[in-house]
Length: 368
Ligand code: PLP
Ligand code: MN
Image (cartoon, rainbow, N blue to C red; front, side):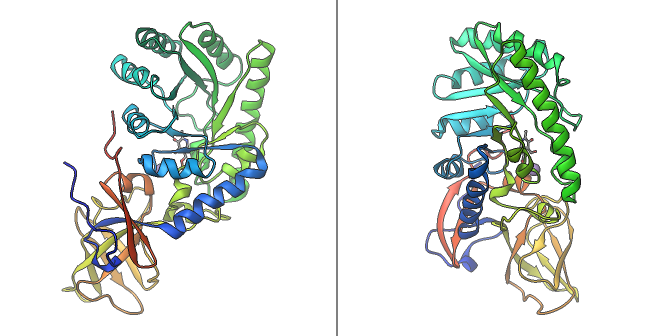
């Protein structure tokens, strides 16, 4: 059930009901502008990953600053973006359920929508769905560029899949999906550079072999917030799929030489107990903020450490400085933005201490 919004435009931030998901609009806009400025000289385009924000509103703002489309992981996310008016959506995943493929093919009537494959059986299923819907779907071949998750071997096996797509009546060969996820949080710039040099080499080799077989490769897509500067500079990647850059989380901020994005996403939490000496308990545990990539930070309160999360309690240790009082509201910086966003129905956009806007997180919970 959609929850009532926790705030109204014009309210002061400290009046917002908790826990609530805040976007600091100045920092967020800075992040969108920074990404656009970093990519402009490289020629690589942004196809931002909507698994981070799950919102057609944010997708539109990214596209107003030059993004050429959006990525999603789930068909249900693609639906929310397509229904929200986004013209170009790529599912950066394999889809093997005929029912989901039928839903995806139906979207092709209202926007451009593509998907990825790494097996001939997926091509046959996509062809059936596209034929039944009377549409033509662009299909990318996902290659393994080093993370050992999805993705067929680069080179000849990938070329064979591309030829099969090109020979399918209701599919077109859309290019290569070449995402290296495990490189994103490698802490040193040298590790990240080496991983993406290998990913770019595998991609380049495959593009050359496609060309030898007479196949044009319109897209080479991949990259996340941790590595995109390398993919963008490679001369091989045409599309950058970063998502977290818009919000920036604690985990990405731990990367050495982290890109110059600001923390723009916060969970506003309230101190609900001060009974234990040295401890402030807030009303946001791991149901309100993701802890899979580490505990949240406490914004601009270096003496406070969020040390433990239970379902609905967050335990903050008062190690130094001013102790928060009962009822005080604190901003938490999520360790990992994507799953944190998925816990909320509304973004509360704030600027200079005031609520400016409320945006629905329409694809929240979109798992199918
Ligand atoms: N592209 C794909 C296919 C992904 O799975 C991800 C994240 O896991 C990303 C891009 C990058 O996202 P982020 O910038 O949030 O790390
Ligand atoms: Mn993530």
